[in-house]
Length: 288
Image (tube, rainbow, N blue to C red; front, side):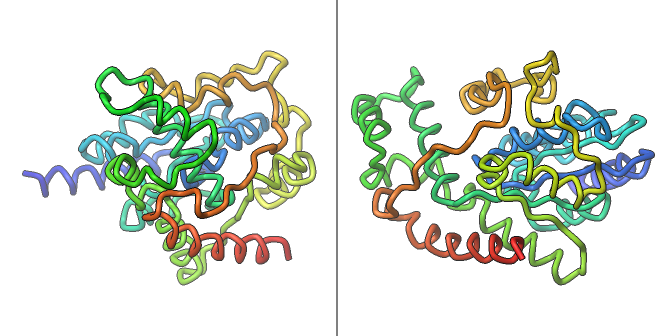
């Protein structure tokens, strides 16, 4: 029965993409790389639908739902007179057949990056804040509050290992996804969210050029009445994770500091070192 459902799900995903007039734009991003903010920027362009499809693979990746949940999450949002924008986490869509279906049917894959130390530290902080506010967590919440305050996570391996497995950084999946595009000769775009935030107009103009869109000033701010909340879907379970971007009105310049690798849990350090190097290679290649 499971095999029948899986085949049916795959068929429905293919049909969902094939039945639309315009192929969607898709952002693939590691968690905490400012992907929702970048989605805000792109949906401010009149050449794209004004509501992005927010992480349709979430239930499939985390809650054991079948691939049909992806079809349900996307629904009829790809249908319209303009292309839609899908935003998905790299590790949620994975590196197998599902990712390949997405890539084969989008205009040009957009890989979003940010220094992995910033991504991982941000996710650690969000997980700890979630534990602090949780009635079910009976550990030392004062210790967690202090760890967040001084940004010192080196002693939290036991607490974090089961709640933040290395796979959930999304960087391993990102590397494989980009390599697949290289091997398959699929043209793709790399966007550094920190650079876009530091030089929003210049970086957004380049992104628009790469996507075949006209740059529009309204892409950089949304305080003039643009309803940005609709693209988030139901965030009742994850409101903490999107609180900052949901309350923002424009692209915010980066002010965060990069932590020394020794401040991270030990089980992350080799992984972080590897993907700092990978991140720097992507930055160098894309800046040429």
